[in-house]
Image (tube, rainbow, N blue to C red; front, side):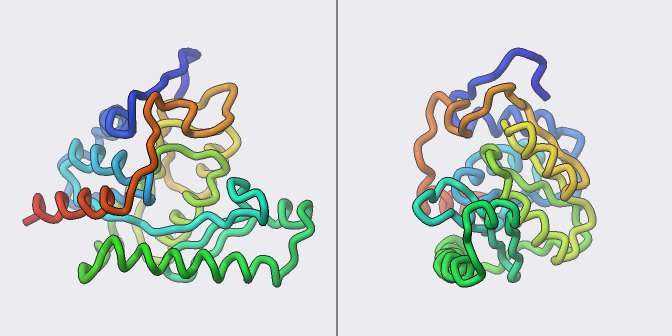
Length: 221
């Protein structure tokens, strides 16, 4: 948690190394799996998994952006048919069921595209009975992370930890209602976006996600 001195991370790799240090109690255990939220959470998660010597995979979820305000999340969807909606925000924006279904249909197509693009012929790592650490590069609204956490509950994970380098105070509090543990390095008093807390915050590409997963598979043999 923040101690009054707010960090700015050099990049996602540095943030991942620092986050991995905060998670060292999970190192070397054979029941731990690390999952990164694509795309930006993947390079962070790869560093965490390396430090913990844990298997690493992606957890594919998609934020549902409000029409004309794509950065404003009205909810999110995840693998396995999981859907998280902000009902209060939907009401305030005047969005009905048909609006939501149209947005979901578009993002579902992209979710399935990413599953195929990232994993190809490889199956997802099993999480049933496992301790799962879900990593992103930060949480603003937290809708995407919450979708991932709910998906993992449905998949039978034994314990779920949400881990991020930085997050908005109210969103971090919301994660605590979904996860068994929340690990966050910084909860700044003034939070506008995740990117403001990184010196370098380039968009992570699909190729970078595939490369990180390939490296992890090679390490697992």
